[in-house]
Image (cartoon, rainbow, N blue to C red; front, side, top):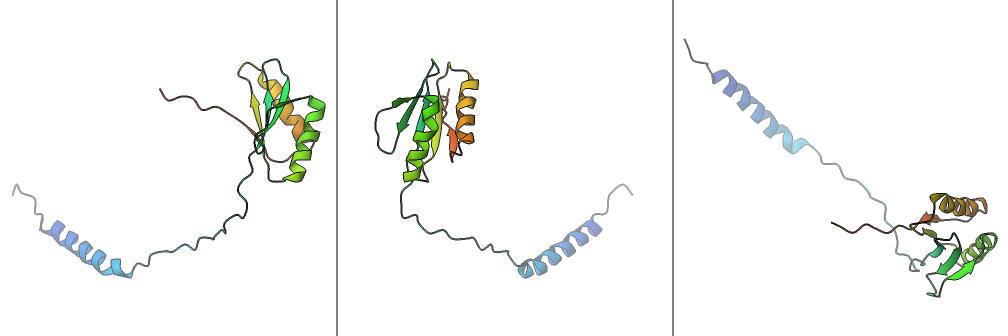
Length: 131
């Protein structure tokens, strides 16, 4: 006898099909209760921008007022930022370093702001153009 008998395989397949057909309606789908969040009464505040120029000089720009950038010293920077955040505690601080400035200067400014307990510090980056 050179042929394979497939009848037992068909029987097993039909039994499995019946089992799946019977158990499928009994499976309960899980539901997740997600938390709800109310809408904010105030729009998000535009951040403060600390600009580190190529010559390592510092400037501060308040994006919420749209004013021009103001040249500041490193010693005066944390005080000015804390003063602005006192009026608006949700205002973030972004550090924008020039491409040619050393990363050490950027980290120095970030470290100084963290030592002065300035909240919400981030780095501003420019996305690369798609090729």
